[in-house]
Every structure is written in C-alpha cells, then in structure tokens.
Image 1: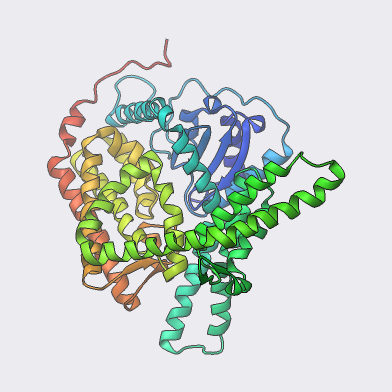
Image 2: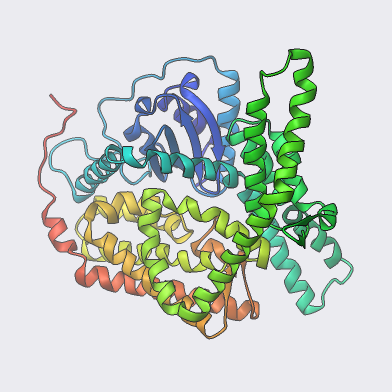
Length: 502
C-alpha cells in the first residue's frame, strides 16, 4: 500500500522532537537517517506504530526510520521541506493510551489484559536495543567513525543502483547484438558516474567532516585526472584512478584537515584567497606523492584478497560471511564494508561479497516462516510476521530482526545458520570459477536480481544466486523449526499488567 508521504513526514518530525531537534537529514535505499540533538526526545514506540514504518534504530544521536525502497525517497523530500519551512517547536506528547506495535504496520498492540507473544517479543526487542545502547559507550568512537563513513557513501547508493541497472541492460544488449546504435550511448550514461565517483566521494567526505565540499571534491578530482600519468611517485608513474574511492576519501580528509588549519590564520581579506589555494596545493601534492600510491596498494590488496578468498576457500568463506552478517547489521558494523564494496565495483565492475552477505536475509526469512508455522494460534505474532515478510524478501531485514528473531533469541541463531548455508552455496560455485557479483550496493534479497553480474552468463549467475536464496530459506526454516525453541517461547507469553492503565 502506498503511504501518504507528506503526512508520514509530518508525523515523524513531531515524534523525533520537532525541527529544532533535527540536525541532519539523509536517506539511503530504505532508511530515513536523522541526526538528533537529543535522541531521548524521540518517541520510539509511537514511531514504530506509524503506518508505513517497517523498523526503527535509535542510537548514538541518530534516528534511522526504515520505510522501504521508494517510500523513503518521497518521505525524505517532504521531511526536508518541513524542516526548512517549519518553525522550531516542541513535539507534542505521544498518545498515552496505546503501546506501539512491534511490527511497524500501524496496528496497535493489545492495550490490556493478557499479552500475546508479539507483546513479549516487542518488550524483549526494546530491552535488547536499550542494553546495546547502554553498553556501547566504549565503542562510541568506532560507531561515530562508521556513521561518518556511511554519511560519505550512502548518498551515492541511488546513483550506483541506477547506473548498475543500466550497465546490466547494456551488457545484455551487447551480448545479444541488439540496438547497436544505442549501446554506445548507454555505455556513456552507465559509466559516467563511475568514472567520476572519486569527485563525489571527495565532496561528501569534506561535507561530513566539516570542510568545504567543493574543496574536497577539487582535491579528490586529482585522483582521476589524466595528467597524473606524467607524475612519478616512489619510482613509478601514477595511473589515473589509482587508489580509487579510498584515495579520494583520504585526499578529501587531508584537504579538510589543511583547510581547518588554515582558517583564521590570515586576515579576512586574504583568507578567501590563501586558504583555498593552500588547501588544494598542500593536499593535492600530498595526494600525488603519497596517498594515491598507498591507497592504490590497499585497493589492489582488497580486490586480490576478495577474489582469492572466494576462489580458494569459497564454501567456507561464504559460510562465515553469510553466518556473521546478521550480527554485523544488528550492531551497525556492516557499514565498514561500504568502501570495500565500492572499491570492488570500481575495480571489477561488481562486488563479489554482496551476494554472499545477502544470504543472511534469506536465513532470516526462513526462520520467520518457521516461527509462523509453529505458532499457529498466536494471531498477533503471525500478523507481525506477515507484515514484515514482504520487506524481508526484498532485503529489508530490520522488522524481522527486532520484531521476531532477536527477541526470541534462538531463532536469531538459526537464522544465522540459514545465512551461513546460503553463503556456502554461493561460495562453493565461486570455488568452481563461477563468480556472482552485484553492480551496486544497497539492495539485497529479490531486489538484487536486476543488479547481478559475474564472469558467466546472466542466466547462470541468476540461477546460482537464486539457489543460494532457496538454500538460505530452507536451512533457516528447518533449523528454526527443529531447534528454534519456538514452542517454549510461546509458553513464555504470560499475562502482564498494562503500564498505561491505572
């Protein structure tokens, strides 16, 4: 069902503390990402109960509202309009008579009487999130670094997806020999962004770390300039694009540092001239005579390691990667893989890691289906699963993670087992020389099919990926049905007192 983006944006704005509490607005494929001055003012239960909200993550001064593909773009646009035009005001208090739903479907949980298993799971999920936030102080530095890293690369995902799909379509046309007059144009359209991705990384890096975006982009542009081929560093000629997105990221970080050191050291009349010039000069020379060479070595090592890992230990590597990805998503550590994916896409045209990691979502779907089958008499939980499954099939796993498997405990582990099995399936074929990759990051599940690529034909590539999904579904279902402890969890749903009633 298509949600009303304007009313949803207005509701979210009021429930996160109003315009005065919002410090930044961004979106990725599925999430509206908000920076909050005071995260405690966000009404988490009411946010989860909003129609169209599939999940919610509030931590480290940020609020991530999971809305799903398409809807998030419309809601973000309306949200930005509201924050730009509305005067700061305190958000109204949330309704006090209805606890929020854990399924994100807009249906309220039962208000009183006996608590269903869904109510118990919702409470456990909230407790899990609270415990992780309370214990995250020691890792706040890492969390902040990952958040900023995501702030650099997440805005690039729509262009990566769009150009990736066009590149796939163009490849099909070339292989079939169709429309020979159109394919050169499609090649240019699909490749233009990737040719200049370093510039966009530089712009976003400077913006995220407090520098002037255009100066970060100017220094990062050096990485892809053809003239660098005439520069010798460490005894070898540099190559345009050497270091890729990692070189651009490092160059923009250096530019931001130099700019901050220069600001305020000159009279106002000279600052506008000297600071930009010194920033570009110092950071540019540092990029040419150090960063490009070092980043190039790291980028090459990443590509070599990824290919070697899957070609040599594919089944085992797939089992480990697919099995551990759900915990990484739960902890937010998966963001550290974004520049790795971007590097592989820039080098090879696709990332071989994403299809393996996407198997974690398949295991999660299989586990949820097993819970649905075992708990035939719990209407509330089955409603939760029905509302979250479509998003899970399309790779949006947060509703199932926080609403079903993680609060139950053991089904989260059996979901990881399903992801491990699916990853091992894809990795096994990589050992046989059949690499499956994705031309963009962001989508997973069924949504990844249009972005698949590899060293074989599109049919074989899609078949291997589909086989991995089916394996993940099957093993996740079987492991949860047999070992998920679902029957014991159903018995744990005991009557509780409604805190909203006197």
